[in-house]
Every structure is written in C-alpha cells, then in structure tokens.
Image (cartoon, rainbow over all chains, first blue to last red; front, top):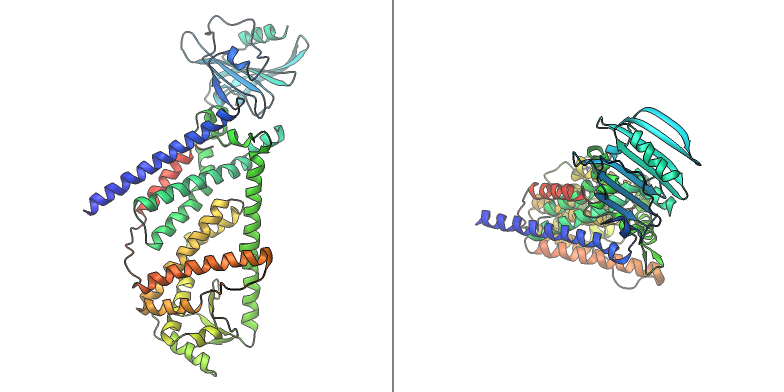
Length: 175
Length: 337
C-alpha cells in the first residue's frame, strides 16, 4: 500500500516536471512569434534577407565543401548577425563557419576558435585590414581564422586546416 | 542595445539572470513535489524551500565549469529557455522586458534592505540596549528572583529537558517573546506575556524560543541565510526564504510541543501573542503594516489550529524528496540559459 502510494506520487511528480519542461519550451517559443528578429534557424540565405541585408558570402567557394550551408542562424534583435556552417563533402563534418555580426559576442563556436595561436598576421586585402590567425582549437584541431570589419559588421571566416582556401574566399569577398 | 547585450552576456549578467530563472524552475518543482507527495511535515517542506535557494545559487558556476560553451549562440538556440530572447523584446513596441526585470530586481532589493537587513541591524542594537537596560534583568537559576514575574519565569523554565540560555524579562506591556542567537544566545520575554500566560503556556513559549536557538547553529541554515543575503536581488529567493522561516516556526512548535508534552499550552501562548489587526496608522505605511499584521495573524492561526488538534500527524519523509527535487532542478536548469 505504502509502496503503491510512493510509486503514484513519483509518477505524479514526473508528470508535473514534464509539464514544467513543456511550459519552458512554450515560453521560449513565444518571442519568435512576437518578434521576427529573434535568434532562429533559417532554411536558406534568401530567407535570412528578411531580417539581415546584405548577407556577405564568398564568390570563390572551395570544391571540397558543400553548398548550400548545412546550418544558418540569424537575428536582428538586439543586433544583426548571421552565421553559416558548411560541411566537408568527404567527411560530412562542419569544415567552414562564416559569421557576420554587429557585435563581437556572436561568432564561431569554440571548436572553430583558435585557442593556441601559432601565427597572427595583419595585412590588407584591397581596402580592408584583415587579421589572419592560424593555430589550434581547444580540441587540438588546426584552425585558421580571418577577421575584418565590413561596415557595421565584424566578419569572421573560420576553417579547419591551413589558410590558403580561406584567404582566397576572403579575397573574393573584398576585391 | 550593444551595451546591454554585453552586460547580459558577461559572467555576472548571466549569473544574475539565470539564478532568477533557475529559482523559478526549482520553485515550480518544489511545489510539484509538495503536491505529489502531499507533504505536510514542516521539516520536509522547509527542505524543499532550502533546495529552491541552494540549488540555483550554486548551479550556474557548476554548469559553466562543466560546459563553458553554455553561453554560446548554438547552446542558446537549442536550450529549453533562452532568457535573452525575452530580455531583448519590447512589449507592445514600448515597454522593454529588460526594464520590467530591472524593476522587479530593484523592488526585491528594496524589500530586502527595508524588511530584512535593517531589522537585523535594529535587532542587534535593541538586543544590546536590552542587555544593558537595568529594567531587563537576566533570570538565572543561581540568582535570587526579586519579583513575582521573575519567579514565575523561573518556575516555568524548570523541568524543560534542555540547557537554557539566559532569560531576560523586558518591561513591555505587549505580549511578546523572542530570542537572539550567536555567541551569547538569550531568550527575551515581555512582562505583558508573563502576566498573560499561565506556567504551562509560559514553559511552552520558553521551549519554542529554546528550539530556535538550538536550530540556529545548523550549518545548512547558516549557509542558506548567507546565500539569501547574497541573492538579495532575486524575488524568488525572497519569497522562499520567508516561507522557510514560516516552516521554521512550525518546526520549533513541534520541538516545543515534544519538550513540554502539551501542544495546547503552546497554542495558548501563541493566542496571547496574536497581533492586533485593528486600527493602525493611515496611508501607505499603515496599509503595509496592516497587511503584514494580517499575514502574521493568518500564519499564527494555522499554527494554533495544528497545535489544538494535537500537534501530531506529520510523517517525516526524510531527505529523499528534497534530493529528487534538487536533482531534477539541476538537470532541467542546465538547459535554461
């Protein structure tokens, strides 16, 4: 009898906890129903144009990478930002991240951030001063990143491996 | 907006926002547990209130240690709840949600300062005054009892199965009793109370205050109090701490009833100490005072009803339910950023 009551109470608690989780999901969804500019995923670059324009993409694109992006996230509130991920055709894993943001707080994930820099170079591509950083991520992967300012946006290109393709893409965006 | 975004994304900003959200979730889980297990025992209910204060206060630093990426864009996108999605909104295009949250934080802080911190300082000063007031005479077992009041208190204190601290009689007509804790704990009884109660009821009042002093040394309670002070901005902590204090009164009622064997005697003592909910000052201050006194009266009535019914029947379920709630809160709150 006591055991039955305990099981019933535990089941009731589990149900109430599940309802709390559902309520949290609903509360999290509401802002996107009120404001189109909240952070969300998009199916295509064209769809992003409804919240962020322009969206800068390279004219040159490595053949080893898959187009279109496998993941696109964007927002216009509290500031405009877009981040696109591109997969390697061979491995299927994310190999390139392009971010465009009005704030420095929005950028590639940690596994595409250089934690230990082997080389940092600042030079000009056309009229823009760009910073190239080559090093390792916190997971030990070889990462190359290129950063520059494009109007109100901070542009960041981050790629697994050496920077050759990265600089070609940046040049196609800046020249 | 960039400035506000930078504050919200700083460690302190994220801690402040998330601790409030985590408290809400923990509070909802604690209420669910109380409902599911039909908890009536004050100790079990107090443990749940402690969970709501302890778990959120320690959760965020722990989560960030385990997963520093928790503040990243990708984690937020897949979180159960991302607070930033609300904080950047303007309701009806005019009222910033962040502003409303700031208002709530400000109110919580003001309430904490005016109703908790200031009274503590005032109590410390009053206690010093009372100790040094020649009209407040300590009643010690080895010293003579020059007045009938002191003799009555000494008679009431005899026979209690605990070592009692110093007991002071205060020249005050209103029936009240309180205790002070710390290095030199003491019990204070007003002359009005001593006059109003018979020996049994007085013994019960002393036992209740002695229970407060015994329990004040609990490390968990001390830690919860420290966290409560540190989270002065959190309205959920404000409410939960007050509910914890209410349960503490009931726990001390249980202990006193056990010590004296007479829950009815304690009920009589509480009836004598019921606040006056009649006329009071006008204006906002008067209204606030009136509400407080009414609230106190309702709580006292609950306690008196329980004591008059025999003061028994609260089966103690132990720490298991509090642990379940804490674990559930830790698991769910990890995904609330």
